[in-house]
Amino acid sequence: MNENMQNQPPLTRRNFIKTSSAVAVGVTAAVNFPSVLRGQAAQTFNAAIIGCGGRGMGAGRNFLDAAKAAGVEAKIVAAADIFPEASKKAKDNFGVADDACFSGWDGYQKALAVPGVNYAIIAGPPGVRPFHFKAAVETGKHCFIEKPVAADGPGCRIMYECYEKSKQKGLKVAAGTQRRHQATYIDTVKRIQDGAIGDVQFMRAYWVNGGPIWHRGDKGETEMEKQVRNWYHYIWLSGDHICEQHVHNIDVCNWVMNATPVKAWGSGGRGSLGNKSGHIWDHFAIEFEYANGVRMYSYCGQQKRTWSSVSESIHGSKGFSNPSGTIMPKDGARIRSAAKGLDPYVQEHVDLLNSIVKSTDLNEAKQVTDSTLTAIMGREAAYSGALVEWDQILNSKFTYTPAKMEWGPAPIVPVPEPGQHDIFKA
Image 1 (cartoon, rainbow, N blue to C red):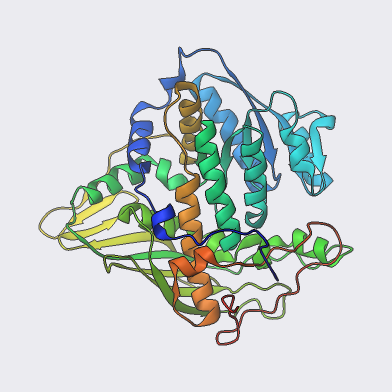
Image 2: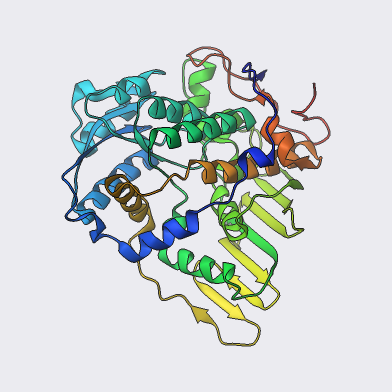
């Protein structure tokens, strides 16, 4: 637990909360997939995977499937993971050469330096993604970055800065908020924004699963290794499950509103995890408020239960919508979206490849950071038991990230306790 030592001027919503063009981009992608790339000038996409866990390997397969569907040449030529056994998965899965599989804390820098790499797949733990994204932007790589993209305010500020730099360099960026690339969501959100259910009055967002979060036990020679191997359970690495998972549903609500909330308050706790190592909670209930007064009621949990839901619902003056594909006007029949598309995990890479080849606008770094910071704001409201405002969390100098990224000591953080936990103390 230390402070970000960068000297940065205060940030405000005016600095960063700007109108998003994501809906228009998504609609174009859904209509034109996947043959839009055919007939374009030949270009080979050489990807480096940063973070070779399940999501990194999955994103690698999605990238290759997207390239095949789009008719472009693509290869995975480099990989990095902090653990050598993980980085070698790239050799087993994709034929990456031994000398292009890197490990250690600086492995990502080596992978990005492999000649010919022009596409980075960033899928390490959320807390280190800002540093990986920064390196990818500095070396001129187009990026696919998994969600969420940070674990605290300072990490989000790095992301916002790199977003601006990536725009200046003309780099294209897609994020792992795949619902924005899913045809039924794109169609339904557009209908909502066009007034199909009238004015939005309130929203509900759920990531309530029927079981506890995995725990791998305490394996490793040092405290740092134990934490990294069990990364989900440490705030500095995962951001807690409200960020790591529930960011998807929060992102949909922000997309519908074309805005981010201005404040949040709520509660939660740690009931199922017991004495397992780690800092995270296993349930949250947060109320977010947008500038126009609309509320988003957010619920997420990883506990044993008989009811579960991963969904969003939008309630308007003239009806209701499940934005995954259904509109239910008060005075009409249920309308189901007939939009068709590829698997959204593949479509997000098709959209990114299309944007690179055709030089169209696609940079989702800001919108995924907005939704990440929204989740962080809700988390800190619950952790502290206080009302937290957007500018507070955006400008917070507190970071959970250790001062040094190396094997050895690691942050020892108590499980947050409302009334005691306060990252805004001077």
